[in-house]
Length: 90
Image (cartoon, rainbow, N blue to C red; front, side, top):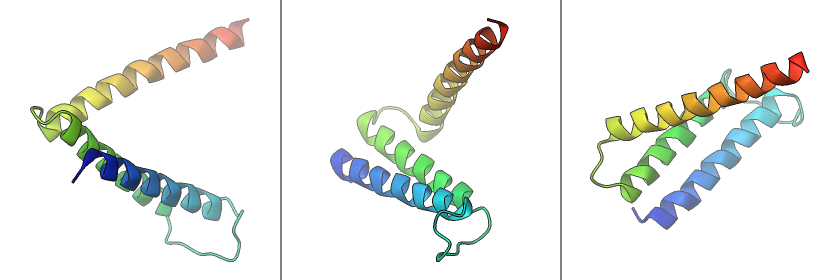
């Protein structure tokens, strides 16, 4: 699948995640979803993201891309936590 099409699909999956969060938080009382629907939608977002990265970096395996993505996420999380701790101390 073309990377631009995958980007569109990723956007669609993000919208479905947003919808699930809104329903779970009670902002759309007329809708019902399965329990943990937001987790399932987040998994769809991650899968779509990995597919997109696979097209952008075709020489890397899905496992390698997942590991690189996890490493980047952990680094960003550590910086975020450090900033939050610094704000609490200030």
